Image (cartoon, rainbow, N blue to C red):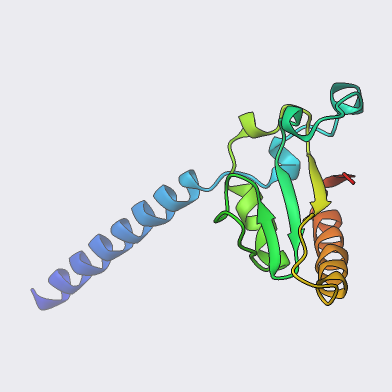
Length: 139
């Protein structure tokens, strides 16, 4: 009798575990590379005004990276966090395909910020390339 109760508990535990695993895996979307098309330069090459850019926009700051409209305003996150932030965006955020606009922040508090911005940009570009995300550098 005790053995059959133990087996029943094991079966219930395994069933609950499977339901949890299936629920979580159903909520995870595939990586950007597999769900977003390759960039189509014809859709964005003629854009001259940053406000007209419809794909994600990224500012490189001395304190980190800002994904415009997604991360806290005027605050930087680590470059390593950017792919996770971009992964959570809906497919509709990528009308030009898998390309982002990247520019350095314009306002500097001091010239000491320049090397930090350059280091953050270099790190960001390497990370985006590793994730198959094309960068359109803006002045």
